[in-house]
Length: 609
Image 1 (cartoon, helix red, strand yellow):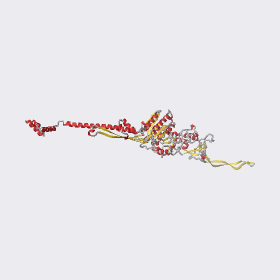
Image 2 (cartoon, one colour):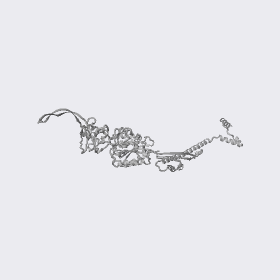
Image 3 (cartoon, helix red, strand yellow):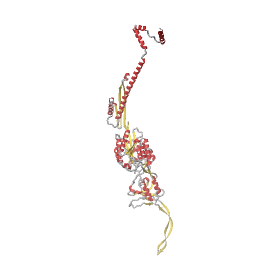
Image 4 (cartoon, helix red, strand yellow):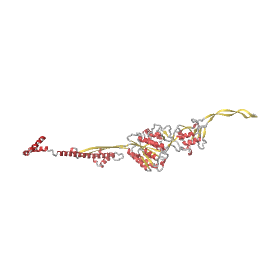
């Protein structure tokens, strides 16, 4: 009793109701509606298992979220596959080398990927021009859901689109090819010709008119621009038509440009090496000229005529030293935009196609690619040029041409400017004069007259001229003279005119030596003949290669059988290339493989996607 009271007291204090006694339960049972209410109240107040219900709800929610993630993952996998397929189909169909209809190619690409049902031909758009092709592929996908449909989302869908464009960019190529004397050995020239013609065929395959221009620069000891190109340059102080080379200063190799508006120094047509021991005659012409005169050595500029390019290459021969720096300088100049007026002039002269009216392109042209292919089989050697004051201007030599057009050279040896009328001077002379006065006679005949001695001033001719040459049976002998041979018909020569007729060393060591008293002049003329050696050439080569690369020219270098050259020269060739991977070291017929690889690389680079 006390214990029950205590419990009830505790329940009251806690706000809870005391459990019913057996008597109460019996009473409730006697009343069913009361019993049901009692049991519901007990259930409501019972807290056992409440956390389990919450945990079950969280589990169901997590299962739903995981299911949604799986739906999304399945959708994204399908979408990615569809997008990749669309990209591949568009790229394949956009290839300009494809002869099959672009829509057919794209549709077949989807079919082979197992997605043929997701695209129709109407979903593919193909635009094609002369050197341009664009393919647009549109597709859509719906992925059924397993969990999203619990919230009313039965499918996840999306559309994909891919656009691929391929256009042939404008390509400008300078082929700088070695035709020096060493190319005549070991079938090197034959192998070069084949490789060069295969290269031409490759870069013009699938090319549209006006898209690729090629200039060929054959080089040995010099480069001949040819009469058409040279006529468009500002030549000063000498302009002649006997040969077509330029003399460059070291500073010229710091830039790829060669402005037609800036004066360029035309190389003299002269023979720096034939001397007095070579039995040379004026009728022989010059034997060893510093600028080549063979037409096959002239630059072929801006051509797209594959037949003409092949024919030009077939005309190559081999001879002379190696001047790589001059070849690269011309190759770079032909790619530089400064030559735009030169191209205009060549077009006006019908030497270049109208398709190239905008060449050379700007370095930053969006679709432009400038390429220089440099090939050499050895090291730089040397070449010659004539410097001032014996490069141009009036000489001290007069020339007379006879009726057979044979030259007679008269050399002035006096002081000051040559005097074609001859110099005289006054001398005081003592003369004996016979008078009319007879001092001895016989029978009216005078056999002795009186003589007197007088002093008089006399004009004396000076032999300041020297005729240096003659011809057999012409009745003329070399020697000192009062006036130049030919008198008033003799004309004064400029230095460049003289050197175009007589070898420099022959003039100094034969003509001036025989004349006598001209040692100072002989030494000065010989000193004016400058030999550009390999060291200078190497530094100039490095400079022009750097200038061209910095301007935006892609340079490939092919070292052809150069295993015996020095390490310095080999490094020079590698450094000239855009990167070491653009340098090819080849032997024999491997040159064809190198040229083919370069052509393939150019074709790859000119495809802009």
